[in-house]
Structures are given as C-alpha cells and as structure tokens.
Amino acid sequence: MNRVWLRWGMLLTMVTGAWAADPVAPGRRGMVATVQPVATQAGLDALKAGGNAVDAAIACALTLGVVDGHNSGLGGGAFMTLRLADGSLWALDGRETAPAAARTDLYLTNGTPDPRRSQDGALAVGVPGELALLAYASTNFGRLPMSRLLEAAARVASNGFALDRHYASRLDATRQELAAFPATRAIFLKPNGTPWQAGDRLVQTDLAASYRALAGTGPEWFYRGPFAQRTDAWMKANGGVLSAADFARYTVRVLDPVQGTYRGWEIVSFPPPSSGGVHVIEILNILENFDLRALGDRSPEFVHLVTEAMKRAFADRAHWLGDPDFAPVPMGLISKAYGQELARQIRRDRATGVSGSGVPPRATNEVFAGDISRHTTHFSTADAEGNWVACTASLNTSFGSKVVIPGTGILLNNHMDDFSIQPGIPNAFGLVGAAANAIAPGKRPLSSMSPTLLLRNGRPVLSVGAAGGPTIISQTLLAILRTVDFGQPPGDALRGPRFHHQWRPDELHVEAALGDTVIAALRALGHTVVVEPSLGAAQAVGIEAGALVGAADPRGEGSAAGW
Image (cartoon, rainbow, N blue to C red; front, side, top):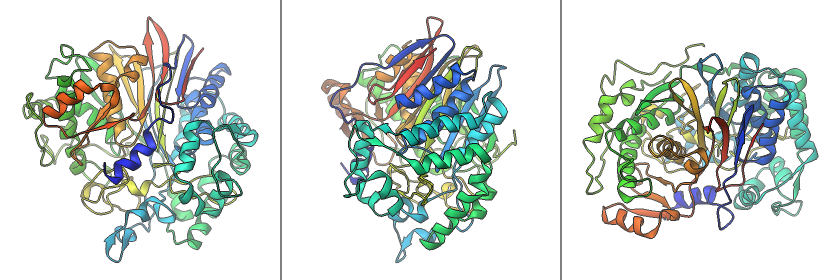
C-alpha cells in the first residue's frame, strides 16, 4: 500500500475492531444524525426549542466544531443542500477561497512541487467559509437566533467534553504536526507533549470565548474584526499570505443544486466547485443501463460494474472539474446520453483500463454557472414540516493546517491542498487534477463533498452525505443504490460493505466485510484489490414506514436522535 493510502487509512479506519450496532432512531417531528452524540443532541435541542431542520443543522455544525474539531469548525468550509417546506431547493456554498496573493510557486521548494507546504502551516490555509454559510442559512431559513445556538456550543467548549476513541486516535496520529504550533499544542497536547487520551476531558476556553464574541457581534467579528486582524498578524509573522482583506472579501455563494434522475427517483446534490454531485449523477447515469437489482449488492458483478463506472467518472473529475467561476465545467457530464456512451465502454467479463477523461456532449458551450445570487464531517436533519438538510463541513485532513490563531481556539483549514498545485501532482488523498483546478486568487478549490437529497415524486425520502476525502462520492453513491435498487432502509444502506475506485491510482479499495470469495472474484476480473478494514463515515435521514428515521454510520461513534 502506498504512502497516500496509509495516511488515508489512518484517517478513516475504525478505532475499535468491530462495528457497533446500527445507531438508528425513529421520530415524527424531527430527526438529526451526526458523527458525534453531543452534536446530535444539540440539533435535537434546537428542534425542541422551536427551531426547524435548518436551525438543527446550524446547531450541529457549531457543536461539531467543538467536539469533532479535528474534522470541521469555523476555520473551515461547508456545503449545504436544502429542500424547504415550500418545495424550493437550495445549495449554499461556504467553500474556502484562495487568498489574493496565492500562486502556484508558493508550493515549490527549489523548483519542485512540495505538497507539505499546501498541507501544514501558514500557506495551507484558504479563507474560511463555514461561518458565512451558517449565518446566511440562519438569517434566511432558520427560526432561532444564531446567537442562541452559539451560546449553547460555547457552553460545551467551556465545560469540556470527554474525548472518544476516534478523536484520541487522531490526536495520537498527528501529535508531531500539532506540536509544531504553540497555540495548537497548548490545546490538544498535555503539558508534557503527549496527546490527550480517550475519556480525558478537553476544555477549550479560547474557543468558547470566540463563540461568545460571535454571539454578541455576529460574523463581523470574524470577517472584518478581531479574528481577521489576528489572523493577518499571525500570517505576516509566519510566512503566510492570507490577509484581513481576504476575509473582508469573502461571501457565501447561493447556487442552483445539480439535479438528475435515477430510475425515476430525483437526485438533488451540490454543484461545482463540488465534484460530488456531478459525479454521483454521472455514475448513476452509467449504471441505469444495467439491471443491478438482479445482481445483488454484495455480488462481484455488482462491485465490478459500479467500479468501472467510478473509474470513468473520476477520470472526468481529474480533467474537467473546478470552480465554474474560473473554468468551464460541462453540463454534458450529467447527460443521460453521455452515461449511455460510457456504459457501452464497460466490459462485464473483465476490468478495463481508462486512459483519460471522456468528452461529454456540448463540452464547451453548455457549462455550469457560477454564483447566481440566489477531514470532513456530514450531518443530516429533517422536520415534520418538510424541511430537509444535507450538510458536509470540513477542515480537510485531520486538524486542517494544524494552525490555531493564538487566543481564539479556532483551527484553520488546509484546503489549499485541494487545488492542483501542479498538473498530475497528487494531493493528500492521492487525487490528481489539471488546469481546471489550478490555483488562482479568489478561486474555490475542487471538493468531493456531496451533500445529497433523494426525492420520490417531489417529496424527500433521503438526506445523505459522508466524510472521507474522495470516498465521499462512492459512499453517497452506494447509499443511493442500496435505497433505490435494493429497497434498503437508511441503517442498512449505510451498513453495507463499501468499495472505492478513483481512477488514479488504479486500485480498487474494498472493505474486508465484502468477503474473501467476492474479493477473489474481483481479482480474477483483473482488478487490483486493496482490502481495508473500513472506508469512510456517512450519516443519513430517511423515511421508513411513513416516519422519519435517522442513521449514523456504524463504523464510527456517531448517533441519530428523533423527536
């Protein structure tokens, strides 16, 4: 296994040796599913206080920034896909942007691309967008004052919470990088330099104070006030280029969701700069040409067909995808005709090589629009009125850039690594890109985050998304396939064995739960198979027997709660 996948395995593999029982919960008035029980409770509390699913999602996001801070927080970015009670569909883009002074040669050492510079430290940081997204959602779609939700999360930060095994394992795996930054070391490592252990209580006084400052003065404190100014000063002193002016320029983008259909079901997902929505729909369009139900979702034939579709979509991702404000992203990628063309390339009797991207129809004259003015964690919420939310938030890799701005407790992202620092140079997750995802000032890097809603006859039946780098796309895809083709409820759809192929490297990664017989059959078909203990972490809210049901991934320590 190469170094990239060792790092990925470190991020995604379960801490315990066996999966927990399905954390599934029913409810009729509201539902929340997150990766962390404290955050799930925060979302449920928001619903019980008179909030709707949007308020619940905001409460989850703010609390996850405290209790799951190695994955997401105010120093990162997020995508939110919404279906409101009035039937309207929204996509809120809180993705980070590149600083005005960003340029490709910042990531060269002696003329050679140096991925470390885009992964840790001052140069790795993009302008955070999660807070702007949450504030927009609260103002336009929520019921509760955001200050109330901030104060609730601040209490968790100031009182502390017990670390779970997953959080403790991330601390242990990144302790050397965390120790390089004094403000970070002071929070996440003990005075003797060792990481906190599972069961230890982590108190974040500075983060609580930052949340309370935001509760008192609003996002201005972050984007045009003390936080932006402190970050500017720290960057100047530590070789960074992110400035207070970059913060002041940041705006959330309101986009049209990307939409498609699969066997008559409606898919609503996130548009570029997410690659997730486009490629979930592209893969579904390919697979619609095969009778998957007849194969069963644990058969080698099923895994083979889905894998061959994944390879072709990820080859397209590497070539075509980027921020649509800077590069034309063809709408033809999600056309049914293009899906049929790619399906005809698949051989059922053996794996085939994919040399590069395809050419979708009307590749240059029908493209996705940009702003139309209207490691990662996923959480889903819904309420009885018909508001459904799928939200994915991220700092990128564990603890992002590892930088905490002194006195604030806020960890900053390392999403500059999601750009192509040079064509063909892989990022931390082994993904390669081309000119469409090259660094440019103010540009948003390509993402795999895929917050997705599944509708039947116009009514939402599933909110799903995942964490885990590029496996987000395959996890979301498999949840949809198991819902539509195999009629599985959310808990079963998340529990089923996962697999992933991202074109480069040419490896099929499968969970051991798929079984030795299936794995041997896949190798006989010509796939280079790498067996993993587990892949990713997804959360979902769905409908079962007419009631809301939430499901947290049994591979982790998350929870679902209904009301």
